Every structure is written in C-alpha cells, then in structure tokens.
Image (tube, rainbow, N blue to C red):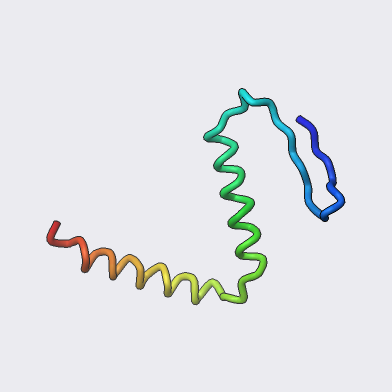
Length: 65
C-alpha cells in the first residue's frame, strides 16, 4: 500500500487489486460518516430524537405487511 499527498489537498491511497473489497467499502463508509458528522451541528439529543421518529414511522408503515 502507498499513501501520497496530492497537489489538490487530497490524499491518494493505492492498494493492491486483490484487496478485500467488502472491508475496503466499510472503511470508505466510515470515512464518509466521519466527514459528515464533522460538519454537523446536531446534538446527540437531536440524533436520538430523529432515530426514534424514524423507528416509529417505519413501524407504522410496515406493521401490516
């Protein structure tokens, strides 16, 4: 594996083609998550409330299936 800094303020990671794709996708998803929450101004309380609303809405839409 090779890690490089580009001129465009980016990091380039070169990995072998036979690398575990599923594991790599999980790492990418985690990095995306970290980038999103870094910019978020939401509190844990707001996140918990949204999660509860989402669960309630899902249950109401799917209870008869």
